[in-house]
Image 1 (spheres, rainbow, N blue to C red):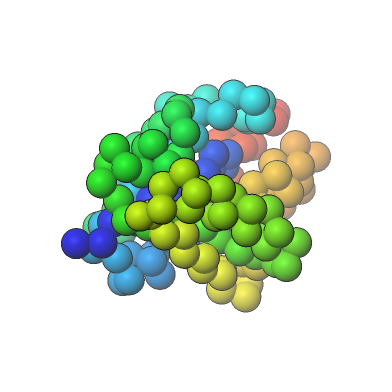
Image 2 (cartoon, rainbow, N blue to C red; image 1 turned 90 degrees about the horizontal axis):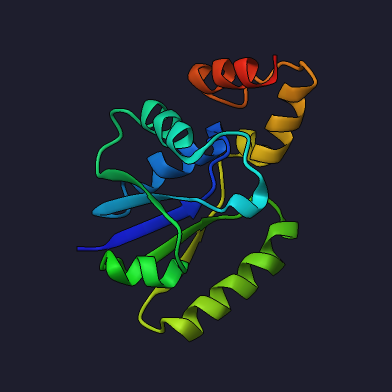
Length: 158
């Protein structure tokens, strides 16, 4: 059985994230979407709210488990007996940072592979940070996020 961990802050989860999970669900036996606590990033939503939004957005997607973590990613992956770290690459600018992370994770946990997936073209420019910024300025984010996320951001910034 191949289990992949898809880590991130998901602050908020975007259509790009959910596209990646849906496509990956046909490639792996089990996907653990792991929401990082990561208070250092000063998230717009607390961990419980992010968890609720992710559950709403991914409702009905098979083979997906949603949980949180606040320790070293490779330790979490090993604790959950996963084989793969799943990461999304939107643009070439993501590659250098992700390549460094993959190398470090391989050094810390040689038995764990990192696998990169690219989003569908229509989602390749979407990031949580851009979505938060547009929402905070009253812009229309309806094509970038699930309606529940849009409503949560509207409430957060109004």
